[in-house]
Amino acid sequence: MQVIKTAAKMKEASTHLKKSQKSVGYVPTMGYLHEGHLSLVEKAKRENDIVVMSIFVNPLQFGPGEDFDSYPRDVNRDIQLAEEAGVELLFLPSAAEMYRENHAVSVSVNGRTDVLCGRTRPGHFDGVATVLTKLFSIIAPDKAYFGMKDAQQVAVVDALIHDFFMDVELVASKTIREKDGLAKSSRNINLSPIERDQAPYIYQSLQAGAAMIEQGERDPKAVISAVLAHLEAAGGNVEYVECYSYPELKKQDVLSGKIIIAAAVKYSKARLIDNIVLTIS
Ligand code: AMP
Image (cartoon, rainbow, N blue to C red; front, side):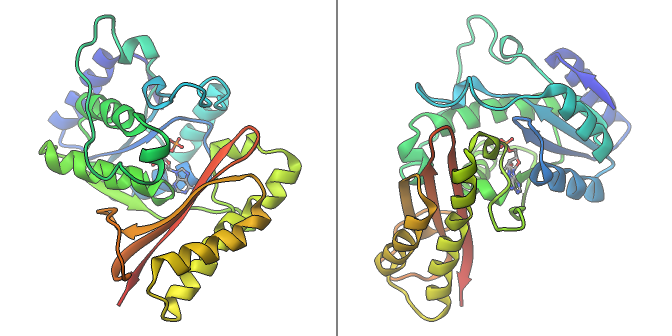
């Protein structure tokens, strides 16, 4: 595996891959790798000649008072895990490389962000869209792999690629979970032992909501109330429980079609999100 730290070198490598007609699957991450990230690598390996991963904790997508400083990092361990997973090129830029002095342009996301994390983390998806526009432009992948754990991110990337006519195919992959149902997340390491015991109730609560829909409930308010009631067992502070069409993220009076039930819970040192996307036939 080759580790590349500058945009110029990464561009050189991707130009070379294009010339040799190798298809490139790209997995963007913020590191502290776990099986969720590695499942994206596995999928990318099956579907492409070469897998590129990036690890970059993007300061632009963290708001004031959020966990940029305490976001878990362990680059040496990540390099080893990426290599073992079969990543061929690992792009590890610094913040100074991605945001050079006097950088003047950023991307502003206007849709799909007035709800869920977009509402509670203003500017977050502008940061995500800006860094991905840079990374896509440097790496020029054929396909880019994202986890449905961050379903709103998938919805925003879908819009970014569509609106900017980007030549990359978005592949969204299922959420990988711990045995007790907790969605794998780099942030889980920042849960206290008690919080770690409580956190699986987030997914259980969402499942309770999904079960109601499967049994015929079509009122989003009823579903949200039930999820909120179950979430009491999850401790923490519930930031939101919301239910929308997916991927448009529009409010529905009567649930129909593809929908998302999503929740965010704040613990003492970690904020966790999870969701279930299901199709009502
Ligand atoms: P992050 O490093 O948290 O920014 O995540 C990098 C990519 O991995 C994103 O596309 C995430 O949605 C995805 N990801 C994170 N956790 C999981 C998980 N538990 N299952 C599947 N994909 C995940």
